[in-house]
Image (cartoon, rainbow, N blue to C red; front, side, top):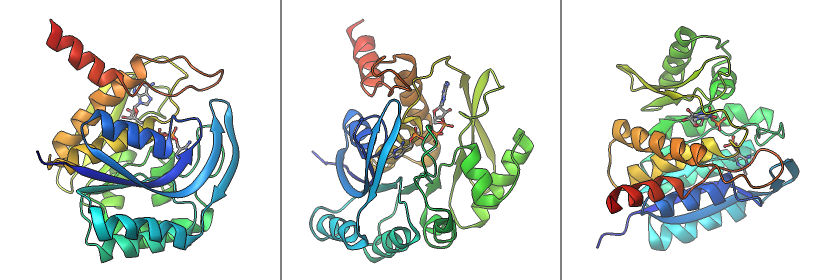
Length: 272
Ligand SMILES: Nc1ncnc2c1ncn2[C@@H]1O[C@H](COP(=O)(O)OP(=O)(O)O)[C@@H](O)[C@H]1O
Ligand SMILES: Cc1ncc(COP(=O)(O)O)c(N)n1
């Protein structure tokens, strides 16, 4: 049996809903062996972020070496990278090991408002990491920050997707979770030639902690199996839809999504 392997390079979320924890749960649920290189430890729960503790750059690169020198990877995801030093070092290692199938989730601010990427790190993100990406998955505010554009409608979102594509990414997915006036959630994929819309009903819930991480991790798992980007994003959309709908309802604030939901539903379908 071929074992597909995915690596997440991201921050730890003590509450288990986002970051490394969301990524590894998602890899596991989609049948992919998960590995991690932790960039920062956060003290976090459903109420917010209580502390951010970045690791030294060599702690991050040594974790990547441990994996690169022995296990190897079929796909890589980056999440919270925190500083320009960490971004540049991570990009260097990805190039060194010639890792492909890179999903860059440009995490900047936690839903509770805490900074997960220093302001001056944007230059390194655009210069060093985006050009290596098979797909970049910003939400609307992140896409606006990366492109320095205003994004208030779909036409502006298409322009922003083109601008990020021009930065060297092979595909750009601008997620629509933040477009709260809209009754539908519309994610936009651009592959340099065409725009594709992934649409669904907006689920009325406050339990969306970790949606972006989980969605990007699901794409990564599918790419690890050799599935093309256009197919991988569809599976990721079904995965996140189920995870948001079948909420766990834990914690007293913005709770995590349900990483079991997608496979539970599939198991349910098979029993019928
Ligand atoms: N309320 C919601 N209902 C349905 N899908 C949602 C909802 N909120 C987010 N999503 C989906 O979750 C994924 C992450 O989106 P988003 O919330 O925009 O990203 P982030 O978590 O990075 O801010 C996207 O596929 C988006 O469509
Ligand atoms: C360690 C870490 N990484 C990423 C996020 C973003 O989470 P979200 O997916 O809710 O935007 C987070 N809150 N914490």
